[in-house]
Length: 336
Image 1 (tube, rainbow, N blue to C red):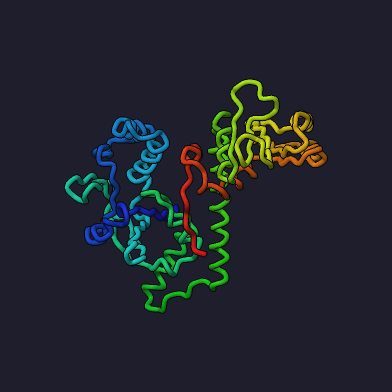
Image 2 (cartoon, one colour):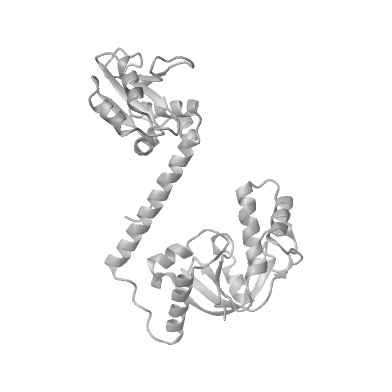
């Protein structure tokens, strides 16, 4: 026998419809412009309908809308479990789906696509494991709850209905460790997304970004005009003219291939004795290139894409507005 699935269906922005979900024994979604979706059969039908109804949405948003509406209409089965979140009380309503898809335009405001639900009870978010809280925190309007999280929710619901006391949360050290692991995971993903964004810049934008980063560090910069640059793309110095020390000569290579020792020798060959070198390569450097830099006659720093992102994050708030627009980032606060 196929096991029951569990679905999260959010009650509008900020949980504004949670009382309506509870009192009317339903869950619902929006996408009003699609009208009654009962006649749509395949995933392709839903995709076509979304594109026609919401032509101004980006392709990724259209795909997400098609996926969520298809699941609500076609994949949720009678007997499946369903969750919705009440942010004001920090509780999850837990129910069982009792009807197939219905179009009810006179029902919930802006949420005319419904499934009838028998609410079984509710559980506090505080008694869930950190992993479960993280899983249920996804922002999608509708998604399938992982089986392990669904089992945890149902077990807690049974405990609550038995009249016993609430289960104790995980020990503080264990919860802190899970939170820390989650933070590291989010941090690592964010770091890779930033690298993706920087890699997508064209060469001129990359050169501007490196110059902007140096300005954020307190230097004034001159960017070489297009064409032959004689081994330098940017010159950074305290006065902006290169007369005051340190005079930093910068080469920027924005390509997938790693730079080798020959490129580093060529770069070092045209430098003055008092120069400092910075070689930026989004494709990284070979072992031989790093050895060549270490024994160079002037100090030179090799900066790969990881190093560039780390430096960018360190100085981001001091970047020019134009540079921040090249790589727009937003700050996320996390419990310490």
